[in-house]
Amino acid sequence: KVDKSKIGESFREKKICKNHLIGFCPTDHMDNYFRGKECNKRGILECCKIHSDATRTEFEQHPETERFRDEYEREYLAFLDKLIADANSIIRRERPLARPLAPQVRLRDTATVEVHRWEEENKELTLRAEELAEEGKLAESRECLEKVRLNNTQIDMKKESYTYMCGEEVCDVCGLRYVIGDSREDKTNSVTHRRSRMHTGYVLIREKAEEIRARIREREKARERDAPAPGVEKDEMAAPGGRLPAAGAAGGGAAHVAGAAHEVDVQRGRRVLQAVEGVEVLHGDAEAATVNLLLLL
Image (cartoon, rainbow, N blue to C red; front, side, top):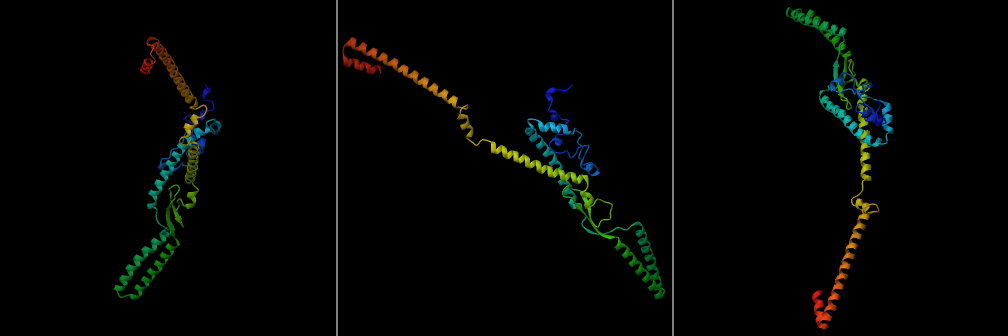
């Protein structure tokens, strides 16, 4: 049964891949850039969550898209930075292990057999030449040594035809060590490496991380520009609808207090006049009335 309260917000469920909503998921089990023996050694797990274009549309049409986008992009950036940090660690580890470019000899099976036969023949000819020399047969000894020289020439020519410059380099994007030079080995080289899915995946996540980092930085700058300067908030609160009614209420209270004090003074004055009149009637002495009035005041 469909929960109507969640219609339009299914993208918030845990089973939905948030990386897919705001960009792309590099470890999507249907289109994983990091699937293979090398990636398995790195411990990069596949994402088994739902990667739906319908939920992405729902996310983009939500009234609070930007709020969720900011949250998801920060989590996505942390995920990408983790992959990049692991790759950078592998790069630092592999660089000292890379073989420098140097001449390498790689004989094929048939060439190896020929070279081995000539080397064995040279050993026998050398021993025969020494024996003949001891017997005083110098001409025959020189013939044996001449055959040794010819065999060595054949060996050098054969090895030269199978000698090439070869070495290793480490990719500064994904950290894979590959063969460089005139490689005749059945190994990954600079061309096949850059066409691999793993290398492409690392290129994409590095570009995506910089893109998202720039967007987050722009949003933070926009918040700083929109934030009120110190003291502005107090002025705004003093505007109509702010603290002005409270200030008016305080002014009205002060006026009420002043009016009450004035009323007390009036009543006190009346009592003084009555006392003066009483003094004048009783004593009939103006001077005494004045003294009494001063005492009352």
